[in-house]
Image 1 (cartoon, protein in one colour):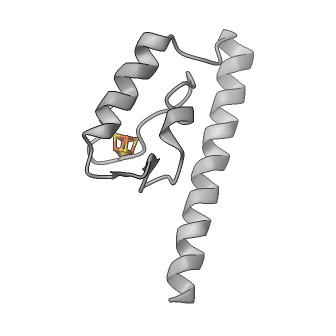
Image 2 (cartoon, helix red, strand yellow):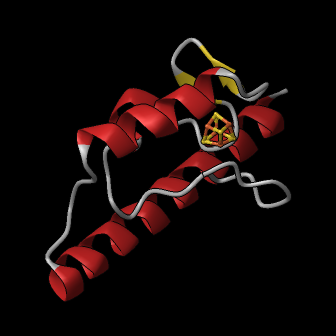
Length: 84
Ligand code: SF4
């Protein structure tokens, strides 16, 4: 059980680390940090109908989707079937 929790926390820290690096890279390169309100609303709408969405969070990356969907660099972390 401890190993499972450790691996989940590790996976989420790696995912957050990648996201922060990508967000900073794109912000420096393209001067874009956030998407439009319309795009953010579209993304969160897709998340709300996704089986990986629970209590406002994505079960794959562990992010709070109300915040993550606002970032230009953010992507759906589902590698097999990314929804946005
Ligand atoms: S897997 Fe993708 S669509 Fe589903 S909750 Fe996570 S970010 Fe949203």
